[in-house]
Length: 113
Length: 114
Image (cartoon, rainbow over the protein chains, first blue to last red):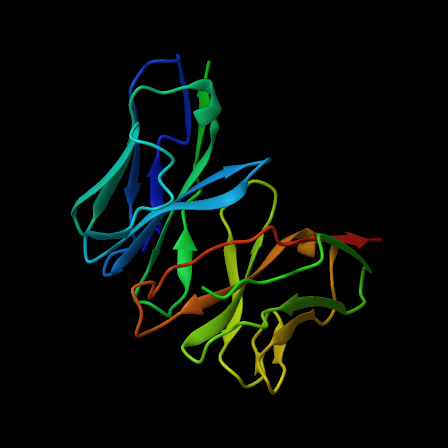
């Protein structure tokens, strides 16, 4: 397996634009996590899914953020409208079940200007 | 969720053992201890995990106290490539609405020096 795949690797967008980040988890993994990392706040859990169902979205900063998992092999994190303070590295991770190792993607570096 | 406390930074001489402590005094019976590390801006990488017994793998050893309130990650022979941020996490593995949730704290920045 190629591991967790995120796209794009880098994204630069203007304030107010919609941004969509994509994640393909490892095949067969039941859990999928979205994280945001900044120098100030560290690695924050935004939302996680189990069997395509969102379990906890309490980390989603505000209504501008939304995440979906339409099937077991794909998830998106959307920011609309984007703001400069959304600039960060966004990581996706997946794990086979509730106690096994979580594997992380390479991340998407988002810059909102 | 149980919280963890780690020192913000540590130094270690190359070739020596690195011992990274973690306090998790409120850990519950259905929570495991996990260690991950993050090198530069890469995604975090799994190191090791355990419930109550000591664990060892090709990367490290994990020592968990008998009362499970603290643990130590040991890198037996640290190299310059082990310079990273090390995260200690307690994770609910069953029987909770938070089952499977993986929360990262601030971690310990380990600097391995020549």
